[in-house]
Structure formats: C-alpha cells, structure tokens
Amino acid sequence: MRRHTWIIPTVYIIFLMLPIYWLVSMSFKTTNEILGSFTLWPQDFTLENYRTIFTDPTWYNGYINSIIYVSINTVLSVAVALPAAYAFSRYRFLGDKHLFFWLLTNRMAPAAVFALPFFQLYSAVGIFDTHLAVALAHTLFNIPLAVWILEGFMSSVPKQLDETAYIDGYSFPAFFTKIFIPTIGAGIGVAAFFCFMFSWVELLLAKTLTAVAAKPIAATMTKTASSSGYELGLLAAAGTLTIIPGAIVIYFVRNYIAKGFALGRV
Image (cartoon, rainbow, N blue to C red; front, side, top):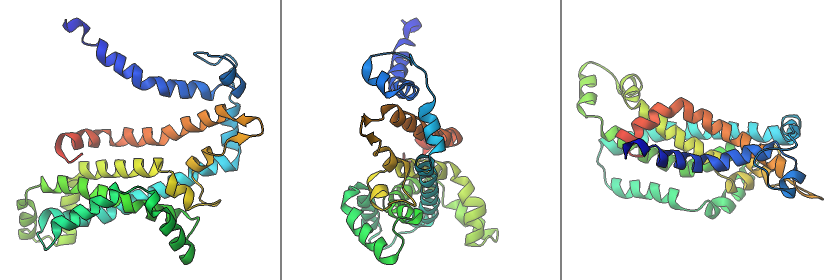
C-alpha cells in the first residue's frame, strides 16, 4: 500500500498546475487558434503576445505601476503594524481587545464599501491617480492583517527577553530594532508576503483610484477587447507575467512562510 502513496499527491499537484499550464500554453497561441480548436499545446507557436506587452507602454507601465504601489504598501503596512502589534502583545489597556477586533473588521469589509469615499477624498487632496493613493487605500486592509499575524509571533516571544535587554542597558529603540525584530524575522516575512499578495491581486480600489499615470496591470487586462473580439492570447500572456512577481516573493520568503505556519498565527 505504501508503494502507491505518491499517487494522490501527484494527482493533486497536476490538478493545481493544470490551469497554470493552460494559461501559459494559451499565451503562445493566436486568438484564432484559441477559439478555433482544442489543442493541448500551441500548433502555431507565436511570441507576438509577449512582444506586444514588452513594447507597448500601456502594458509594461501597468506592471511597473503595480510593483511600485504594492511595494510602497507592503513597507508601510509592515512598518505601521510592528509597533501596533508590539503594543497589543505586551501591554494591557482599556478597550485593547475591542480595538483589536475593530482592526480585523476592516479586513472583513468589502473593498467596494470604501471605493467612493477614497475616490472623493483623494480627488480633493490631489493624490488621485498616484501610486501613493492606491498604496494608502490598501493599508486599510493590510495593516489589520499584518497586526494580527505579527501579534501572534510577538506573543510567542517571552517577555523576559525585553526585561533582560533593559537590564543590559538597551534603550527601547535599540532593543526593538537590534534584538526584537530579528527574533520575529519569520513573522515579518510572513506578514510582508500576505500584504504583497493581497495588494497585488486587488482590482477594485486600484482601478477606481487610478486613471492613466498609475493604472495597474489588472486594470489594463480588463481592456483587451477590440472590434474583432477579445484578444485572448494577449490576455493569457499578461496573466502569465502577473504570476512571476508572486512566485519571486514566495521563493525569497519560503522559509519564513514555513516557520509561520509552524509557529505563528497564519
């Protein structure tokens, strides 16, 4: 029986990889081939879809814009969540549990609820259609998530570590940056990963708060229609390229994610 235990994991992995393979395969096909016949691999192999993306500013600027505001959001979310999570894990104050729950309710709310208020606010203050606008909007959802993840990691660190550092003469900023942050490095990696991924795949706010200068790739992908129909090969190529940043992030934080599932609140 043990000789066949590999069958179920293999079938599961194939099942997971099949949509990705199909997307990549479609990206090397023409739209006519995609609509004309069912083929397991490209019969008329073409790189024209990728050539369009890398030569058309409308397309490659979409990737650049997405990476910029996602990076800004990830840094802001983690930077703000670190001291907030430390306060929740180390101190008890009036309404702390209620405040912690209120933070999580922001993550539960649908993005559509905040689209119009953000649009009017950012238009009034003059930051509409900027990378900062989208990054700040996404912090509403990512900061609570980061606080929740980091608080779990910080609570697992004994308070004796803080007391020992103070006895050794460390100031709080020195202790926090030189001792505490390296101790919860796995938690920071996990929080940064989830902030990056949620911001990368979010479409509604990113599309509503941008027009031209900061339009993300997700918004660009929704406009692949032409007089002859949807350019499916081009859309598949764009979708294939959107997988790459997430795969790169997963590669660099893979060890942190494993520790996070084993030790933290993930």
